[in-house]
Length: 166
Image 1 (cartoon, rainbow, N blue to C red):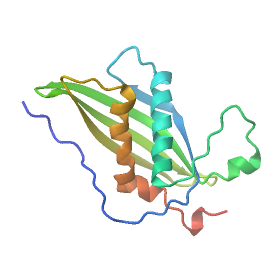
Image 2 (cartoon, rainbow, N blue to C red):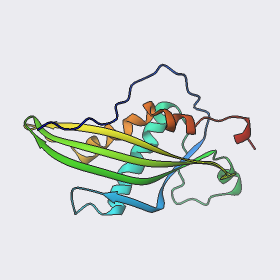
Image 3 (cartoon, helix red, strand yellow):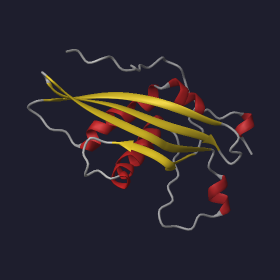
Image 4 (cartoon, rainbow, N blue to C red):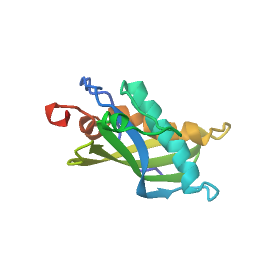
């Protein structure tokens, strides 16, 4: 049996601006559909959110992370785009070559601090792990998250224009 195709991404050569200062979190109503039952929502969130942050940095966006520090008004207002991880789904299919993982990540991009415009973005990824090899979940999920740089609706949602400025 053949595996149905998923959305493919490629570099369209467009120069996207990377001026938006971003903050990444998990939506309150996030839905996680995982293969392994031992991966609770919090554990998956702890894997996906850092991957999204890393990919944004790799693209060139400044990303703010607030660990256990007090968030001043100035720091909060410096954020221009809030990215919420809304949904992540992964399906496992055994194939002749090994294991195929199809993934679907839904992100919501919110203009901040106005919170007037939100954009839902879908990102797909497929990871094939050869039958003689193993891969960490981090490496498998990274295949999907790395497509953020090529997803036009996501990149467009991160564009900063005059209406986004304070």
